[in-house]
Image (tube, rainbow, N blue to C red; front, side, top):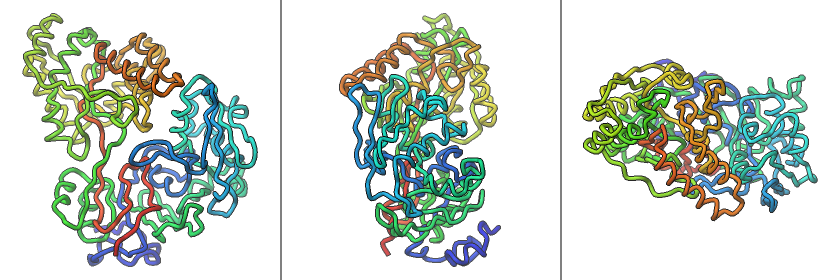
Length: 532
């Protein structure tokens, strides 16, 4: 088998991490060996990363002002030991921990925070989208990001918004990563440190970047002077192991401590291994059936309602979705505040037939279902194809890659589509509603491809107004009630996207490793220990 890592690098790190070598009983007690997929990791610059895999790395290297608790998803202190939201909800004042320092030894100041939040926006890099979508721009950040004093930073909101939602954005490494501005300045070649940050780190986290090789590995070195307390692991080796069977073999042989990207058959096999723990936790987004309301058949709410009763929710989630999803029918994440209990739609062909007859389609019709070729998507689409047929809807499955399938959705050139998405990285209802329901302009010229409401040609002005009002309601109890009202109104409106499963993520790890956080958006290794 091909060596996955360069022996000259790994020889100084751990003697037995190549899968071509003789299997060992366990990895070194002070080093963590992680397997995951690095295909989407293109840089170590927090402002330019894309996807959760890069976030999973940088969570260990950069601290944010505040964090989300991995279990409760509540906002908790990090670099800011406390904060105050203004009575008018138009600013948040953060008070930095006086003991917080960067790995360089430089103290963390409000100027570092201002620099870090401004940099992605000034350079128009990928991670700027999070704050730009909330109204921040190169023209207003000088006013919006205020350095009150050395340890006090005030974030102003450029438009009516929920400050808690903005704070949740700042928990994400990327838009919220705080950089050592002095260290970056030392490596600024007129590019605001972009070239240097591609391969190096300027953070305050429990680890620093030792070495990174694209699609090979990342080595994280312990920050022994970490202001939050030195981590137990002296090093973390994160290996690019895209093949699930390779990760499974490495776990079974003891060459790998954690596997983050395993397929269902390998996870099922590992469940029987008494030395391996398999853990599944909620993540972001939904698996869903979407319709295009450009098609007059699906513009009819009776037809859309009929589709609700032509999905075998229990069967799909029992047979297809283990390790990928759990049954969910409301388009708001189960961990968000204000969420109502899930709906109880079931496969009911007779009810669906009656609704189709009311809509003028007593004999059903022919249509197509687009779906990417990945197994859980294709299996779900095939199951839905079968239940649609029971009501006379004959759906031809069209498969393709993500660009083809979701590209057709962005172009509004589809009929039915089995997909995944819908926000949820932030435990706030607005994160889901903006992605799935909100559509401020349904015209073709608007081209609002980031809104899945627009992609499916669903627009409900009443729901739009309710979503906007709920976002800016300052009273927490009233706001939660508004979001509950929205959920009830959505049920009556029959939106164009019907979730059937809420996404989960699964990891497998050695049973003697504690402190593992499975969700890549909040995963950190600073509390990992080995009981050996």
